[in-house]
Length: 220
Ligand code: DX5
Ligand code: ZN
Image (cartoon, rainbow, N blue to C red):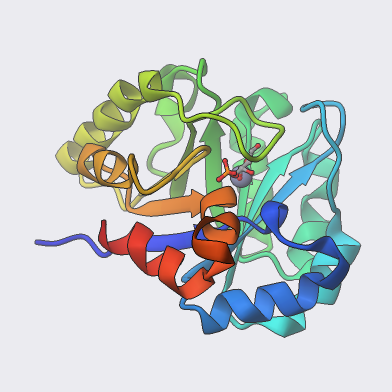
């Protein structure tokens, strides 16, 4: 069986002066998902956008909005992101007092549930929830900024998760996020990732040819 690879471009690397148009262009270029990085200047040392901006860009694409919350505490904002049009809501277990409750809260709004592991976060912190989640986002850079260098030391964790998911037949997507480029895309797919997030590579390589870069990441 060949797994179909999905590309989730991160709008963190887009031109924020025309963010709606950029989302539209990503859909035209063949993006599967739209990855939205939400940062609060507290959980991570950077600030980006919140639910009001997501609501504004939502009409520019019918693609799945893959919302990566790097905010703490996370629970009190879930409803706002759900109402803004997120389809997948991914949070970091370190950003909540009760991972199980945060999962339930996301479910209550009928959204897909993602949990994210920072480079140093261990599989153990999510192992009791594997039957309750749709996606695991493995960070291959420290969360906070685009354009960082891929950390190959997270590959064993990705491979281990893939093994567990296959063995137990969990229905979980494995998404890799941070420093993905044309040199490492094959490696991360072979390690088990089926969704690749990319900001810099998609918006900056080949003079910003979105279609070409999305296809290269998918096929390489
Ligand atoms: C980092 C974000 C990533 C990142 C991806 O905290 O979660 O989505 O911006 O950007 P690149 O592809 O530039 O590493
Ligand atoms: Zn992200």
